Image 1 (cartoon, rainbow, N blue to C red):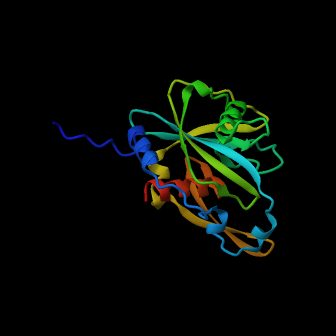
Image 2: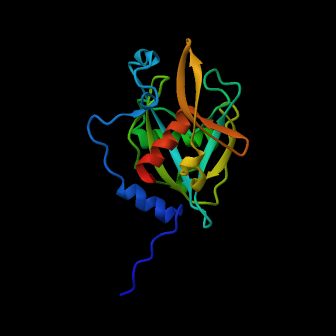
Image 3: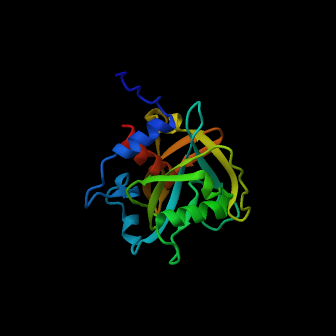
Length: 211
């Protein structure tokens, strides 16, 4: 019997195996901005939390998987111009976080769900802006076309999974909030600044699957 060949690093096969093997989040496990800012006064003002979901679209390229990200429209009132995963608030009509993530992804960038396979979830991520976010893990089949909603998204781009899962690319930064320092990760790539909640979710993905 031939030995089973391990999947190539940062391939979709490897990503699937890591998702399947990830440890279940235990009751009381909490992930989010508070892990980088323990005891920060800003966190006292974020309850009740609003429920949201984002899609983590990992694209199945033969030469290495990539992650699809968006740049939010500059004209938006909140988080304008920031890099984000496609997603948004979970509506009462959504059957669950997966459905919300798929709906928002199609509304924002026109990525059809026929190209998307949901393969799991990450633990909820609590943002300093008051959202409880469900990161939905997915594999995206190449050959899709995108139609960007200009009211919500200025651009969509891909980043190699290898780059995002390399802790050498995870820089710590901070900014002042009401005269107090707020810490976050940032991962500049190709002229885009991946930071804040998006970088926090990427960091959590790294810690759970690749660390």
